[in-house]
Length: 327
Ligand code: SAM
Image 1 (spheres, rainbow, N blue to C red):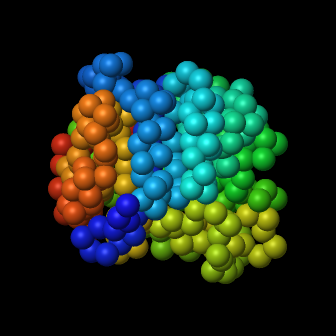
Image 2: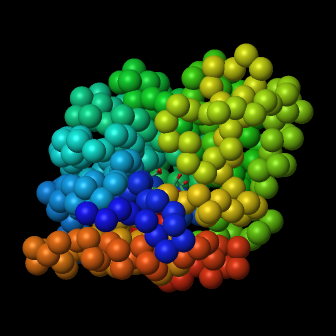
């Protein structure tokens, strides 16, 4: 079976699977408060169908999976899907992106099912501010969620912080301080202008170079680091002297890393999306439900994978929210 290589010679080995477009948060930079219609249930791939997609792509070279959403932990029996994917022997790494709300309840069950690790989105360490950003009061405690993941053995644990000037950028140092005592990897993500959301001006983007200077001013020098053992992706990593964990920056707005892109995305309704930004996608649900082999459709998608994303020129296609495609 021919390999997963795109038109620019990039080898694709990483699939991000969105298992739902729904979320229990309404983060102000991600989803509108209302007016975003949910996908009809019948359109959403079943866990058995997702297993079939993974199995067919694994034969072609897929090695790493991330389960995402929407919020994946609100889809019932997520552990069943983890177990299905774990049974595909070519898959070396299964990660989960979550807002962490349900981790204290689910971490050990997911680990037992074969989940390797988690990324937790946490934009603030302050209760009132979490509610102001997420626009839902679910009692989320980022440190407790990370500890639950750690106890369940779901490491390396990454905490993803979307930094917004004037909203949470005064907590950048507090997040970095967590890495002194915990073997966690705090990653700062530059805010991306997506969708028809509450106006997000460019002034709210805090360039990663600026926040690294801020951290060094308070906590001392940062040395370049190799970062976590698994799943380095597009982040550049640093470490504070004597720290147990590391600091990473993900810079879609100020630096591009599309040349080394190794990923594609499966939307909850079964479209293979080859770039987070832009409308490059191919329907896999139709052929899957018709019992057709997926390889020709996957190759068609890869032949169309763009060389780089159009974020910097603000051509982000019809994307209304990252929750729709699995951020
Ligand atoms: N619900 C899961 C979570 O919270 O991780 C998975 C889906 S969420 C869409 C994935 C990631 O996308 C989160 O870390 C979120 O903060 C990030 N994200 C969403 N909208 C963004 C934006 N406009 N700019 C930067 N990151 C964004």
